[in-house]
Amino acid sequence: MSQTHMSLIDDLAAEVAALDEVVAALDASAWRTPTPAPGWAVADQVAHLVIFDERCKWGISDPDRFTRDLETIRTSGGFSSVESHYVSMSPGELRRTWLDGAAELREAGRSADPKARCQWYGPSMSATSMLTARLMETWAHGYDICDAIGVTPVATDRLRHVAHIGVNARPFAYAANKMTMPDVPVRVELRSPSGETWTWGSDADDVVRGDALGFCLAATQRRHVSDCGLETTGDAAREWMSIVQAFAGPPGEGRQPGQFG
Image 1 (cartoon, one colour):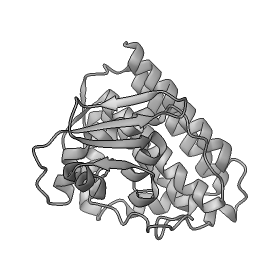
Image 2 (cartoon, one colour; image 1 turned 30 degrees about the vertical axis):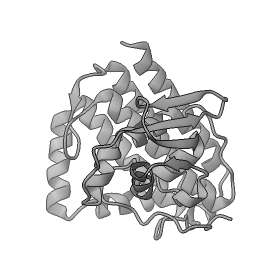
Image 3 (cartoon, rainbow, N blue to C red; image 1 turned 180 degrees about the vertical axis):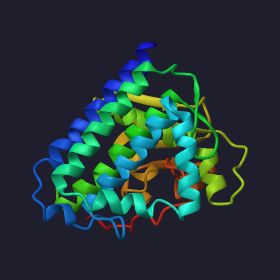
Image 4 (cartoon, rainbow, N blue to C red; image 1 turned 60 degrees about the vertical axis):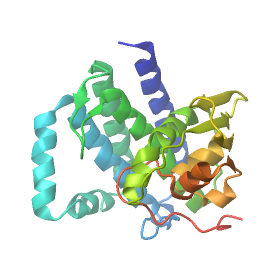
């Protein structure tokens, strides 16, 4: 097993633990607090993590179970019944279910070939890519929860995983918005929370620069890009940042400029 893959699993564990420090202190009423995602309370955010951690585990270690579940979801009209099951749990039960499932996912990841193709919605993914996506989702949905209850998360170098997805998802962002990506390279230069400089791409005239936190907030649409302190040089960089998206699915509603002061 590669050290990179195992380090990723350790980072995923740390991200789960950081969010658990937040939700463990909440009383039952706080779990019903609306988050910035329209229609989603704190409990909905945690239930979402439960659902897709579980399906990621199946994609890695039990592809037949994943396929059966996918067919059930298609024929039953989507994830609404699954979501309602988890949201109806008491906060304590939902939290335990999330933590147990996250631990089972990490165990599946430890046993997996990092490069093996795993079942997922749309194209298959490597186990490493799937676990990186789960870290990104844990961080992003955790940020919504923190916004809801007035807590500022501590930025860590685990953001490199989130930024990496955001950078590599540039073609997907264009496809999701039904736009043609220009054949223009864009270099990304980000300041990490620890003070390092992270870079993606070769020398290019078009550049995105700024703090890693700002880029990750923009890429996960937890802040409007105009509030993320990013410096863009070149039309291709500016256009990409206007639609940047690290998560799968259609473009989200995002956040409004200045929404968080």
